[in-house]
Image (tube, helix red, strand yellow):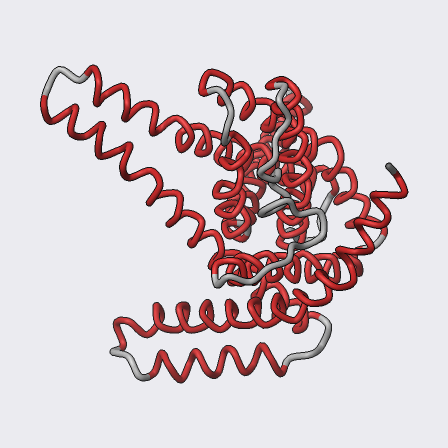
Length: 328
């Protein structure tokens, strides 16, 4: 009898430990998900471009094809690489993370440069984030494949940033916990991003249907309002995505420098934002500190991006074109 009680006690202890592990995994997943918000917004803002010029009936199938490619990117390719880095080269995580932060800064600066009328594109860019150029093939099936392939390539870059940021938030722990958190974050973000993209892409169709078939005058007016609002929504989403890229990219670079022992820039950001927060009423001090740091992080991301713009346009982009021509 005592043996049975001891066994039950061991089972209860294991169940308690398992529950604690699940709570820990859930907490780590939520924390990591918050850290990649900027990349997620950027991803959701960019992807709708890949269904422009496509038959509306084919929009959702293409989005599903891109989403499948995103799952493969995150779970088949990037997750094992992240685990190997954590196990055998954890020192490489911070430099890789800073490289991704610099890429985000470059992308944000390039968007602002083009908005101001500047020219030139980055490596592998057609118009924005590698989106296809204006010239399109005559064959609709070929156009679909080309756009889906371009979107999946762009997703690979953004997914690499997401998985690296996620990995950097995880404690050095057992590998299977890291794998579960990476998988949970990867799956959840893919579902959220491409679910949002599907809603954005079809919103104007829903509005058009309501405008034509609504039984009430108010319903038809709401539908017309949706159709008119979508271009504005896309512009706002693009602007938010640009700011988010600069903010996240700058914060990654500053925190990476801190990890490498270079604290001056991080101390400047914190002290300057703190001075701004002290000027506000106590009720708003915490929000002021956050906004001040976010603004300065975005400035850092913008400066890094502007420094990279001529390097990419004059050195890396011609080199990329030359290598592509040789492969062709």
